[in-house]
Image (tube, helix red, strand yellow):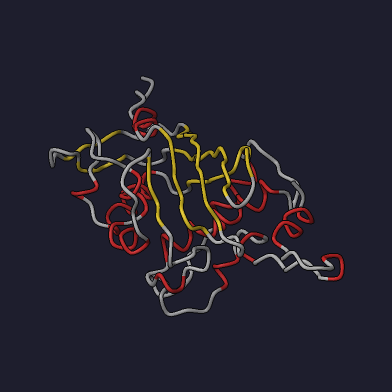
Amino acid sequence: MTLEEIQNQLAPVTEAPAAEPAPALPDYVLDENAVLKDIIDSWRHGLAPDYSRTRKVYAETRKASHTAGSLPDLVEKLVKNWEIEASYKTSLSDWRTIDASSYTFSVNGGPQQSGEHMLQIGTYNAIIEPNEFYCPFHSSFDVSHKTFKRMMPTFAWEVLEVFSGPPTVTFRWRHWGTMKEDYVGTNKDGEKVTLKAHSGPIDIEGIAVAAVNDKLQLQKVEVFFDPMMMFRQMEKKVDA
């Protein structure tokens, strides 16, 4: 689906549709760094984060290459901007990529989480269940981000393919990086867990189903993936 087709789909039906210009698409589906330019007081650490290294890894090691303005390209940029907001904007009213009145997030058919809940616990804790390597109940928002970002400084993300378009968008995604430092976390039993860095890839894939409104804002996001895939790859033995 092309940019023109998306714009036409969003355009209101009138008696003379050809005479009405299609509405302009929001910047957060056209520019993967759009929300980084927002001048707000709610940036988690006082200013917008630096995604330059992650974007570089994405450009050099991505699997898919989408035509600018195509549906996969628009979806990818929307989700990248959403991730920035969910991770670094501390006020839900500043999240431009969601419809705050209806937004929910769930993982593998689990309970629907509100944006406010994600703000409290963090993005990692929202998607990872208690297990033998990590437990969200033993890790705060800030601690969870430090735990994973210290181990894997960049964690690039891409859309591999899109199966359906708005208002319900179903797509397959990939999240990847390199385990450069030791993983040190707390598991479901409250025990400290250390996994030695192996300098190898961490590469996971999944499916997402997202409902969007006429502004292409996220209303409901359902993510499906194997949350243990990352930890199994982290546990890989270092060659002697």
